[in-house]
Length: 263
Image (tube, rainbow, N blue to C red; front, side, top):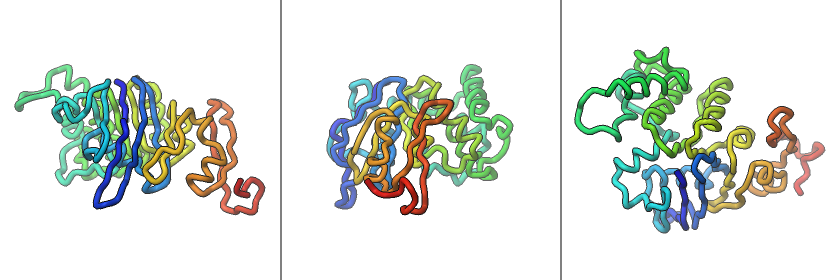
């Protein structure tokens, strides 16, 4: 499913958080939003999963304005894992994942056999099947994050939106999640702080600053020392990953070392 922000601006309490955003994601493409804190990444994503309504402009799914769809219909196409997902009720992991079927159902009938299997597979893919009977409030932050990804997968979306999905995850589960995103076949929109993870995961990157897009393109074209210094205020050394060929950024804490002088 194709996603497009067309001239999207978001103003809240007199502050412009996103300014005239024009950005697209083709069907099956993994597009990463990167930028400093406060650059508008989360705000842009919230417009896609309808937590925010653009002040100006439109978000389109396959050319259809999101605001013309019912919330149930858009939830059948778009699933989100947000930074602030939480629950005060101690549902079991299995129950939380089964909530992903809510947009597809009416009434209180039990899930079908196919839906049960779908939820089980989602838990297996995120390595939480062994936690199925545990209360979600008893889990670590990383375990809970993986449960929320499983719930999103159980939703059977065409578009998967993830806002800092690697928060709280150990290295193994970061790699597994991001490897899954590359091969899942869904249109994926993901905000990441770690530029190396973004380079390894995404087909294209959109670099945001002060609510506007600074640059878009393939990671190797975008993540140059000059652009990283201009946007993030640090000057990296960019090397090529020996196995994947993706750019990897090396940082130094001392600006007087070789490679540390601003361009």
